[in-house]
Image 1 (cartoon, rainbow, N blue to C red):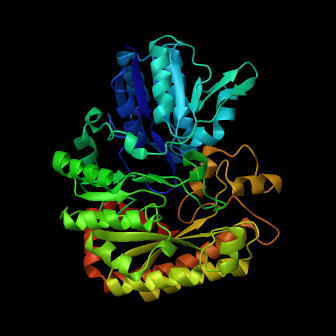
Image 2: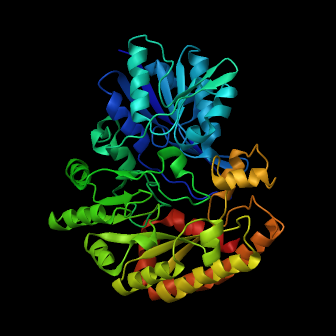
Image 3: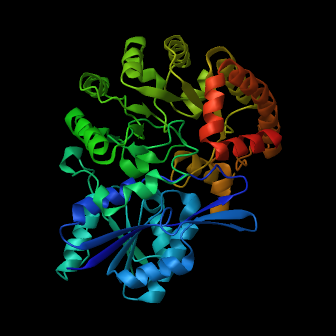
Length: 493
C-alpha cells in the first residue's frame, strides 16, 4: 500500500494584502476521505503545524518553516504528494514545496490541485513545476491516480489528470460528480481539529463568528457568467448539491463530535435552489440545532425574499454577505454580466434592516468598459446603503484572475501583461486593492483617487455605525485585536 501526503503550503501576504486567516483544509479533507482505504494518507497543513510568522522584506510568511516541511516529508517518505494551490497568489509557496519533494526523492510523484491548477495546468506542467495537475474536482481523479499507482498500472488516460507528454500537454476532462451525496463526510479524523479551533487566526478576517467555527460547502457549480469569477472553471456551471439530509447529518456530526456551533457556508450559490435551501433551514429550526452561521463567500440577493429572510434569521444566521457588485444597472448587465436587478437587491437590503439581520455587501470597480461616472455611482451606493441600512461595504478593485473572461479581455486588449506575478494578485485581490487595469476611460491613478474618496466617506460612516452599535464595537475589541489593527491601518492609509 503506497503512502500519500496531502499538503496545504504556507501563505505569503504582502503589506497591501488582505489579512491572513487559518481555515480548515476542506479540499484536502474531501480528497483524503475517498483514498484513505486504499493507501496510507497523511494531511500536513502548514497553517497549523509548527506554525510561525516570519517577516521578510515587504511580505510576511505564515506557516511551517521550510526546514520543518522538509523534515516532515522525509519522515513520512510519501510515494505521492498532493499540493493544494487555493489561490493564484500562493503559487510560489506550492512550487517551493514541490521542489523540496523532488530534492528528497526525484522519483516522488508531485501533484498540484485546487483552483489555480485547474486553470493554469498547462504552464505549470510546461515549466516542470510538478508531475501532474488535477483539473476540477479532485476526489475521483485522485482516487484513480492512487489506485493505479498501487497496482503499478499506467497513469495515462486518467480523466481529469493533466500531464506532460514530450512537448505536449495531455488532458482529458472528467465529468463533474452529479450526486454529491456519493462522497463520504470529509476525513476530519486525519487532522487535529483542536489545532484549528485553538488558532488565534481561525477565520479571523473572514467572519464575525470566527471562534469555535468551521467552513462547510453544501453545493458546487455556478450557472452564472460574471466576467471576473473563476469558480465555474474549477467547479463547472451546473449547480450540484448535497441533499438536505446529508447537510443536516454533516452539521450534527460536527456539533456532536467536536462541539462546533458556528458555521460558515462557503457555497457560491447556497440559495440557488430555493426549495432545497428552505428544507435545510427548516431542518435546522425543527431539530433545534441552535447553530450560528454566515455566508462569507456571498449569496445572490435576487434569490432572497422577505419570507425566506425571516426563516434565515430564525435558523441562526448572524450575517449575510450579498454580492451587489455595482450601483449601475448597465454595468451589471453588460460589463459584469451578472444579469440581476439592482432594484431587487436594494429591496433585500431593506428587508435585512427591517428583520435586524446583519449584512455586508461586495462591490467591484475598475472593469474595462466602465467609466469614472459608473464607478462613482457604485461608491455612492455603497456608502448610502451603509448609512441607511447598516450594509457594511466591501469594495474591491476588479482583478483579472487566470482563465476568467475578464482575464481574456485584458490580454486581448493588451491591458495587462501575461506573466502576472503572485504579488500582483496578492495586492490586487483585497479591499482597496492595487489596480491592475487601466483603459482609455480611466487610469490606475483614477482608481486610486476614487478609493481615496471612498475611504474618506467610509471613515465617517464606520464611526457612526459603531456609535449606533456599541455592543458590536465592544465585541470586535474583545475578540478581534488583529482586525482592529488592520482596520486602523486601512483608515490611516
